[in-house]
Length: 421
Image (cartoon, rainbow, N blue to C red; front, side):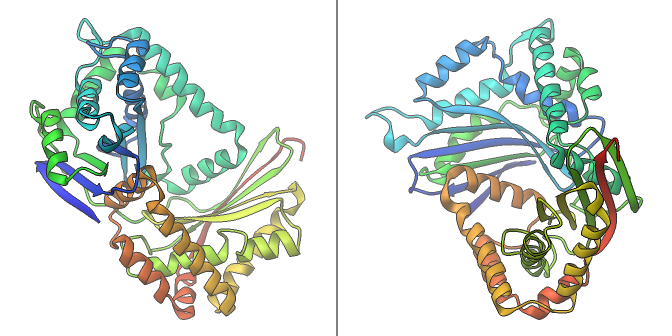
C-alpha cells in the first residue's frame, strides 16, 4: 500500500512500507512540463549535481562518502511521463535493520542527498565549467549512441514526425545541439528555477514508518525558497501530420514503424482492455504479430507492439528485408482487423491476460521496480490502484478487447531503409 503525504505546497511524499527487502530506495523528482527549450537542461542538471558539493568537491570524495554509507548508490533520474519530464536523483541503500548495531543509514543518506541537491560545487555564482563541459560530452555521447540502435532511432523518428506540436515527440534527453549550447551560468539559473517552481515528488521504499520518513525528509525542504507552479493536467495525444515517411541510411536491415492513435489512455475506463489488446496483438511471443508474421509467414526478423498509455499511442516495430515493407505493413493491419472482428481464441485471450497480470505482479519484486511503477503511475494519472488494475484485467472480455481494437487507428508509418535501395 502506498501512503501519500502532502508535506508542503507542491511537495508530495509517497511511502511504500515494505519489510521484505534488505535494501530500500528514495527518489527526489522535480516535475517539469515537457518543453523543447529546457529538455536538455533538465537532462544535464542531475549529472552536474553528482559531480561534487561544497563539502564533497569531486567524484572521489562522493564515492568515499557513499562507501561510508554501507555502499549506497546514487544516480541521475530523468524521466518522461506523458506531458511531463522529471529531473532529480535516485538512491539505493541498505535498510537500517541490516546495519551494524547503533548505525543508521536512511537519515544520513537523505542528508547526503540534500547536499547533492542544494549545496553544489560552485565558482563565482555558477556551476564549475569543467563539470558542466565534461557532463555535456557524456550526455551528447549518450544521445548520439541511440543512432547506433536502429530500432530506438526509428521509434524516435516516428514519434517526432507523428507528434506535430504535441510534446510527446520531444526526445527525453534533448538534442545534441541543445546540450552543446548550455553554459554554466545558464544551467545554474535554470537550476534555481527548478528548485523554486517545480512540483516535487519524493518516493520512499523501505521498512521505516511514514511519519519517520516525513521527519527525515523535512530538513531537505525547510529552507527552500519556493513559489511552486501547478502543472496542467495530462492530456491525450494531439497528432500531427499522418502519411508515410521513408529515410535512407547505411543499414543492413530495414526498420518499419507504424504509429497508431487511440482516445483510450490510462485515465480511461477502457485502459485494461487496451492493455490486454496490446498483449494479444503484438507484445510478446504469444502475440498475433509474432506468431503469424514472424513465425508462420517469415516476413520479419523481429516484430512487436508497445502502447504508451499516458498519451494513447501505440507503435508497431519490425526488422525486415527492404523489399518486405508493403507486405509486412499489410499483414500488421490484417492482424489488427482480426482483433477488431473478435477473431481471438479463448487461449489467446487467457494468455494475454496472464502475461499482463504476471508483469503487474513483478512490480513488487524489488524496491526499484516499486518506485519506478508507482512514481510513473502518480505522474501519468493512472486511475487504478495496483490491486484494482489486476482485478480489472481479469474482468476483460473478448467484447472489451474487440471494442478497444476498433478505437485503434493507423496514423503514420516510418521506414528506415538502406541507401542503395
